[in-house]
Structure formats: C-alpha cells, structure tokens
Length: 533
Image (cartoon, rainbow, N blue to C red; front, side, top):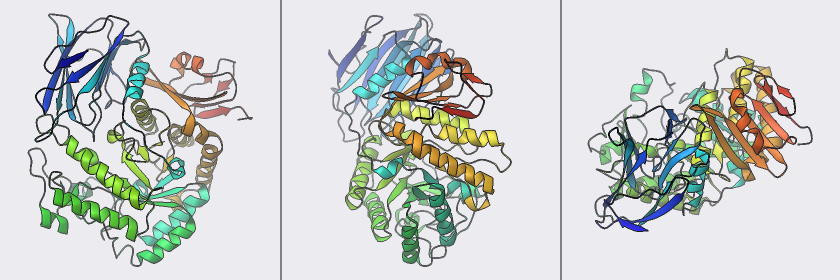
C-alpha cells in the first residue's frame, strides 16, 4: 500500500502488523496521520526514554533527527504486551511524532511530520503499524532489525575495556598524569585509554557549579595539544605506545569556544535557540567552508599525533526541528568526516554518544556509549539497556565510565561493575588514589569481563525486560550459555524462560536475595556462575 502525505492511515486489524510505503509528493515535507484506540494502554515508550512512561499522557511531542533519537513510539499495557507500535524508516530526516488524547473519540491522535530542509527532497519511506499481542520490546526489535541501514565493521579494540580521564580529573591533567595512569590501567586489564576534554588548552580545572558556566570557552582548535600540558607530545606519544593501550582523544566538532581563534574567525550559528552556553557556541553546520576546516583539523590530529581514534562528542547539539531542519546536513557532514577518518585509520576506534546511537549511525562509529551518569550504577544499566533496545545485537555498546564517591559502600562499587557489564565496561577513577583493595577489585572485574563476559557481547542475543515502568533486567544468550543481569528480583519470572538452567552467569543488583529456578540463591550485590563457563 502506498499513500501520499497528509492521508490518514488505516490501522491493521488487532493482532496484525502492516507496512505502508509513504510517497512524499511535496518534496521537502510530509505528514502522516492516524489514531490509536485507547484500549488496554497504560504505558508509552519512545527511544529517548530510559524507562517507559506509565499512565495517560495528554500531549506528547517527540522530535528526532539523525543526530538525536529516532521516529518510533510504542503503546502497551502493564503486562508489557504491545497494543500499538509505530515506526518510520525516516531516520535520516528531521521528524516529529505528536500524540494527543482525543477524549471525545477515545483515541490518541498521532501525527508524524518529516522534513528534509531547504533545497532537499524527501525520498519514499516505509512506516510500520503493529497491533500484534507480543511483548512490546519484540515489536520494537523486529522493526529495528527490519530497517535497511547498514551496520559497521567493529575492530577488536571496540570490545576492549576502556579507561576514560573525564570524571577522574576533568581538565586537571598533563602528560605525566596521563602516562602514569595509562600504565596503571594497562596493568589492571584495560585495553583503551580515552583522553577526554582538557588536552587542547592550558587551563587546569575541575567541573563544579562555577567552572561549568564558562567551561568550553577555549575549545575550537582541534589539531594541536596544549604545549603547557604536553610540552613534548611526540615523546609522550612514544611512551604511551610502549604502554600498549589504544589511545583515543575527545573532540567536539560542533563546538566553538568563545575565547578561541576559531570563534573570532568564523563567528557562530545565530539561529533562534542557538545562543552560546557554558562559554561555547555552535558551528554553523550549513557553512561548508567552516565545517571543512573542522574536518581537516580532525584528520590532521589523528595523523600528526598518531592517535588510534576519537571520541566524537556533542553531535546531538544540533537539535531536531521540522520547522528548521538540519539533520540531513548533519548526517552528511558526520558521514564525510567518519569516511575521511577511516581512510587514515581503517581500524581506528570512534565513539559516539547515546543520543546519536541509532541504526542510521551504526555504520559510522565503532562503539556507542551510554550518556553521562557519574555516581549512578542503576542509571548506567538503564541507559545501556536503552541503547541495546534501539541498536540491536553485535554492536559494541559501552557503559558510561564507572565513577563512585570515595566513601561508597563495597556492595555499591560491585553494583557499578555488574551494571557496566551489560556493555563493554569503562572506568574513570583516579587510579593513583584508589586503595590497594579497590584497585584489586578493578583488576578482578576486568579479568571477569575478559574471561567470561566478553564472549556474550560479540555474538550473543540480548533481550531487555521491563515491569511497571521499571527495568527488570537483561538476558544475553549464546548456544548453551546465558548471562543474566537482574535489577528487580520481584520481576524475574519473565526472564527465566529465555535462559537455561546451567552454564549461567547471574548478577543480582537488587537489594534482596534472588532465588534461581533450581533453588540457588544469589545474595544482593553478588554474582553466581557455573564454574565450567
């Protein structure tokens, strides 16, 4: 079935699923309208939600673009059964899904708007309408896996545990600290060192409510390290090479610090809503000369400094908008940037942040990281699960760096590591300041990941389970093996049918004992595994 824009779609019968081809006739913008009967619907989910929204939502507006989220929405009941799922294979455009309760008719009036931008023309795209009585996560996953966007190639380094400098020291760093910490990280079992923000300017500082106000004022030059913090970078790079870790550096292609030479040269994006913030303005994505200058600097940075990759941050700061769309241009720019970086580093490591971890970007980066959650092991788990639901299997999904307060309990430190194992684990503690016992704890968890968990990440099949608006846990299966992470022991009955009774690894992140089907009891903040695994 093919319809033009502005035509109201006919829903499939209850229990059925249909795919409709939309043929945009007016070039750069189209609208698709339909309604959803409000029958046995108590929860709603969209990709930007960590956990489902419970209860009625009179009005919901969910924008998306290639650099932020994706156009789909799920309506389901408290038994986690799908009542209506809608998804549009239009991830390369700026989109807006609006859902409004029409009390008179007893329906959600839903409208999808897709917009290409000035001088661009939309291509035909498919929309899926699914009313099958299946777990809502299954409806999401089957639509996600049906999309025609290519996955990438992921080098071995993308599955290696990573150490990141950010939470540990922020911008209070120098070459000596980096080298000492990298040596410790290598000894503890990490494979990658991510040097976060702070390498390109001289100021030494930590994040707090005052410094954040002007934090990014000096960023904007991307092809040279601070000569104060790294006085002899080539010698530093040689010492880092001998340590043996992949060396990855943070960049933000769209950021212009307001004290930077780049800001003085180019100015900044002055569109409404794009005001400077935290000492920083945004590049004008439509200014091709400006963006070419950024790309050339990033390629030089990788080549001249012999880096193994880049952490590409804040792409999502170009906000989705169907009224002023720039998503297609952003995707064009980032695609060109990554192609040129891959040419000089075919096996390089390139990290994307959570909000632009979607099927349309799966071919651009090599790893996709959960959003910032210092101190929060539960939110780290929730965000990793969220990315797994939106991206699928066989993709390196990384935890946000584990970071805990010095006075944190041992049980919660273990919960941090168990939660992070839902992805490739990442840590950002000042290793020199850790106690000997906690340093050994880090070593033990990195060994456990390498020896027992890594196999599940590469080729396992993941499922995510929710209950009453909260995350129950995740299950990953391989032939004859299963890896189970339980957050809510009260909701575990839904997990057990998906995994076997032996060859198991089970993490109990909850605060009460977890009884397995065969009677084995796993204490809170503890793990269980069959020795032959």
